[in-house]
Amino acid sequence: MRFVRWSKLMVLSFTRITQVLLQMPMATLSSPIFKSTTLGEWDFDISPSLNSTSHLVFDSVGSLMQHWTNTRYRNGHNIVPGTVPIGTLLYHGTYKQEVPTEPEWTALDPELSYLFCRSDPTNSSASGYWHLTLVATRPLKVLYFDGSSAAKMQSGPLDSQDIVIWGEVRLDRTLDERKRINKLCDWGREFELDGFMRMEMDFEIMLCDFTRGVEIVSFLNIQPDEDKWLHSAPSNPPGPEPELPPGDGASYTLQHRVIEAGMWHNAFPGETRVNLDVTRLVSFYDTDLFPSLTDARFGQERWEHRLQGLVALDSKRFQTRIREVFGQELGSGVDWRTLIHVVVDRYAERLEVLQYLLNTTSTTEHAKKIQRQLRTMLVPYILHTAAPTPDSTNYSWALPVYEHCATTHTRYISSTPSILAKLTKSESLILRSIQEVSKEICRVVVGMWAEGVELGLDIIPPASTSPSSSTSILELGSTAITGIMDQWQKRTQDLMAWLDWSVWAKCNTACGHEEVCYLPTWPFLHGPYWPHDPSSGLDVGQVPMDARLPGIEDREEGRPQPKCIRRVEPFTGI
Image (cartoon, rainbow, N blue to C red; front, side, top):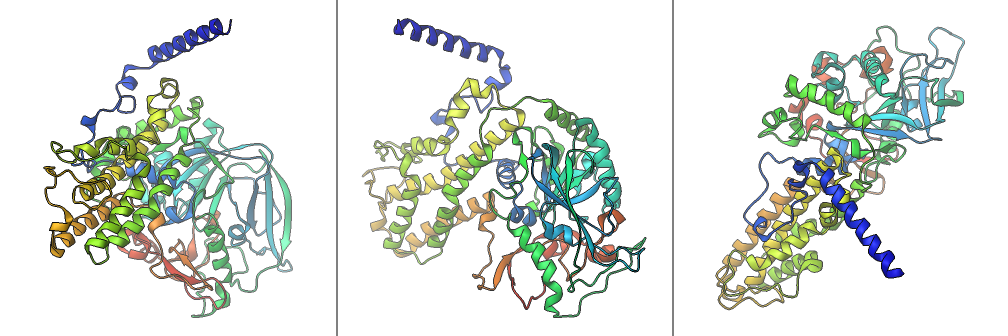
């Protein structure tokens, strides 16, 4: 009886798989994701295309809602639907005891909202600041813009919002925050969106309606901070804020506290109070969806990537795609962000150590130490049969190691029809990015390891007459050893530069106990400026446009570099 049931189960399973295959479009079945791999696809000499964006998709998806990476690369390229869970607190700083009746800005940490608290300018007897705390009473639907998407800079952080609202980048709207929030909320009404999530010093949610999905927890008249040099709401239009006296450390306290709050979300998993659905992600690094940006990006560093090159046809394609994602069904169930970080965790520190070892004087013994470092990175993939043979060329004997290394994390997903049938377009993009990033890491690492084997550096003996490398390391002089290690160093540096993981962006020297490693963060780029209420439509003290928004030519604004700053008094400039 058990045999009959099991037979029926096998028939049903086979029937189900057949149905899935028949239902899948031929384009999916013939895609690189679905194809079985052969050794012909594994070649140590083939590197990624110059136009490949897989590493950019990989890193940006893996960095969603992480403050460090999105401060380093301010020009976001991803738009992702998400939900704010029930019970999540939102904070709003204001100057009057009135709940907003139009879209306004809320913070996920009170350190940010407190910056926008004011005293009531219409009531001379009033004192104190007003601080509103809300709680989500149902899951709030939001749309997240990655990068430093709340930074009012003309160099690109606002590009993706401009595409949503106006269909093109509008530099003339850089400081028009009131128009921006109103237009976003009008646009989002079709999709029943409650708000939009952005990042600057910390994370914020532009809340469209303070009467839907939220309730008041408290509305407090709180003590003004004596370190704050602004004690009134902005006039209309607001005048410039006075600059702080040089070296007045106490005056930096609130600025440092909000920077500190943003840093709580620096590393993975980042800000966790919003749940993103990457199965519905739209990425402007998707070259199939937005081909016009490929030419616009060519030859540029990542800091310079913009959406200004998006042609009208691709802009229309975006509007079509964003409507698709709001209407699509659930995806495969794969935890893509965790999978990306499995790869990052596996290789980030080890590649960093490898780079360090390759920067050291090369001797035979040191070369063997480097070989052992390479071997430890590949232990799970080195087959017992993997060894050079006299007739192997171009390290062909190591190709199975290369393949196992590159496919181990995605092989099941990419070879299971029932999973492939559920993949959304966004998931297919992410899967392809993981595959290509893994492949390039393993191409470089396995390639160096295989060369080391044939040079006699490894515990695997080289073939006596292998054509790939006929000379063992023992027969080479120190100059030749140095030359080989220099080649490995360049290959490692090129790989790490291509991956460009922000986990490697660190302060050059360790910061002291009273310091913290910091990336220059808008608006604290040219000294202390106090943010105005965004609803005024003007910001950061009305500093002249050419002084506040110079764009990518300014290194600190366009290419922020980590530096140590004090985290306890006396504070210094940020």
